[in-house]
Image (tube, rainbow, N blue to C red; front, top):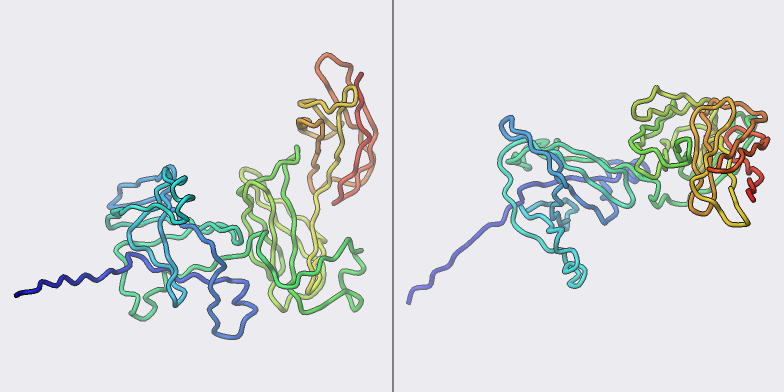
Length: 333
């Protein structure tokens, strides 16, 4: 009797060498810390022989992490239409996908890291050759939800306490946080945040939140923050306090208040500030936020609330740089 034996070897179409950039900075020399799971991998573009394909929506690739910490793609995509089934079984529904030779753009997303876009080519070269994984090595930078170890918030500090021998200093992570908002208080996405210090660079998502972490030799003192929002000139914010081993915050200058009629919040009332461009609208509960440029000086401003069919109301408010001031409610009959 003859026995036929078929042998197949399953090889990964793509191998990614992902590392946590922040953890590596704080680890021992030559350490290669792997990122915190979960991670998701999205194929957004393909250039095969000059024919460019944009995947809209992006294709989610099924990528697994092996025991050595590498992330491997074996030619399968996650079937989004079967999401309900995936929730029932606890495993994603996948199917085989054919990717011809060419150049690809991959986006890596995570609840803990900034989104990262990476180029790679198929077929993949030999990873066992010297620097065979060089073009497939990706550093992931912490996002605003990253679990930084032992962060210590530091409240508002005076300029004098930010530098010199009396400035606080410790060995914990040195962080600077903020939220980039438009004039109506909505998050600005796609903006790049950087500093004059030894920090990483951050690109905001739709929430506008950001966090910068500084290398270990960053001393306490003021830095300049550079903000590059889409379609707008670069904004330089000077004198931003960074304290070694602490977490500080750069706040925007803003006013906040409410518009009510008969004690009930009124939506879509128009809020303007005399001498300032733009306007804000009240939310469903009648609340509103008006955000000024970083160059806004301290002083008194006139705030106006306009409601259709009602006389315009005005109030005086004090503006405090890098702080939010509460304005007395506008009350309509």
